Amino acid sequence: MQAGVIGTGHYVPENIVTNKDLEKIVDTNDEWIRTRTGIEERRIAPDDIDTSDLSYKAAVEALKDANIDAKDIDLILVATVTPDKPFPTVSCMLQERLGAHKAAAMDVSAACSGFMYGMITAKQFIDTGAYKYVLIVGAEKLSKITDWEDRNTCVLFGDGAGAAVMGPVADDKGILSFELGADGSGGKYLEQNGDYIGMNGREVFKFAVRQMPESSVNVVEKAGFKKEDVDYLIPHQANIRIMEAARQRLGIEEHKMATSVKKYGNTSAASIAIALSEDAKNGKIKENDLVVLVGFGGGLTWGAVALRWGK
Ligand SMILES: CC(C)(COP(=O)(O)OP(=O)(O)OC[C@H]1O[C@@H](n2cnc3c(N)ncnc32)[C@H](O)[C@@H]1OP(=O)(O)O)[C@@H](O)C(=O)NCCC(=O)NCCS
Image (cartoon, rainbow, N blue to C red; front, side, top):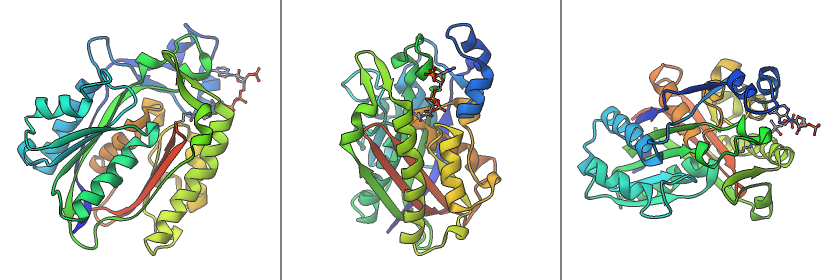
């Protein structure tokens, strides 16, 4: 059995908050945000939409895309740091709402690397034959833990959800290699302090520009390929400058990298999942492409996969 992605979906709230909008609430400006981060706008969910609602919409689209009935899902993994409440988990809420009654369900907590931790966990169950279909969702309502008076952080984040159905695929397709890692000593650089996200931007930046390129190259080599074989790169959508470090290390052209950070900002565990769904549907990712997904985040954590796209 080889585990691969057989369907994707995503959902972002309709409400767009531009950099100009943020100029009205904190001492910042469009030019600073664009040049330092690449972000132009982000989506912010209204009060009555929580993480489970965002998850549900992305999951429904992914199931439809995979042509799988919710009743056939064996396991639901929701990667999030902004669950509706500590328990029940978002994954259990989703199980009930989808009618996925056979599925086991748990949330995965690895901050912005959560979707990678989820995919790689799903792969183990599918590879062994223990489970056939796993639904993985990355979903965040970061706006509820964002300090809207802190210009260092509030310009960076957004809300949204992305989902993937994973299942067995042909031997030459699916996840070919992976890497996961953590360094708890850097936890202090990115944490929830009381109600809000606290961040040492420079330290996180240093970690990210080192780790993302390194993990990207590692998974390509572990899969037995060379950097130039990579057809498409989906780095965690945190900051265009960090993403560029990974792209340049792989030596691939600009159009071969997902850049939804412009439209959605950093949606933490949702970012890679949203980009995967969007770019699978708009044709940027093609059948048989060698795709690298790579994330980093609070913990500190990181994770990457090399996968051959298709069923
Ligand atoms: C946050 C980040 C964009 C800052 O960019 P930078 O080029 O490193 O900027 P610096 O930290 O050097 O700050 C430069 C100045 O801009 C100021 N600044 C910070 N936020 C600002 C904002 N929104 N608007 C205007 N100025 C701002 C700072 O206060 C600082 O001013 P000072 O020099 O007077 O103290 C960058 O460090 C980063 O992306 N880090 C990683 C963050 C991340 O990805 N977090 C999520 C990980 S999952």
